[in-house]
Image 1: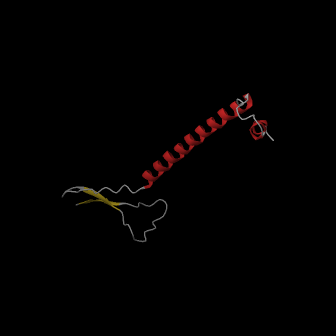
Image 2: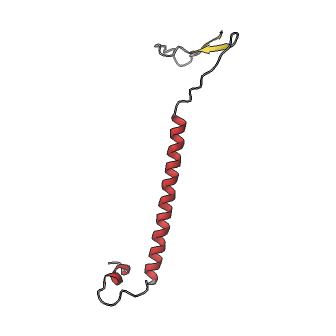
Image 3: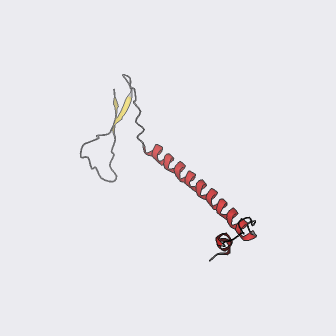
Amino acid sequence: MPIEYVLSTISGGHRDVEPTKVQTTRITKLEKLQKNQIGSLEQCWNKLMEQILWSQPKNTKNKFQFGDYVLWFPKGENTHLGKFKKRWFGPFRV
């Protein structure tokens, strides 16, 4: 059994005893460990939020005017063109 637990479990009038050097160093190490755990949880949360924001669709409505050139991608059609074929068609004038 670790020595820091032996002193606190002794029955009798030893309740007013100051913590030993071993106990105080153990407590400071545990506090430091807790701070590190909280810091790592915050880092994980921040990374998760960055991934969520990055993965959300960034659909922006493009407003085209007459005369603009656009490229067309046949979305939704079965267009497996191969590795070296063009997937976008155009430019087309609106």
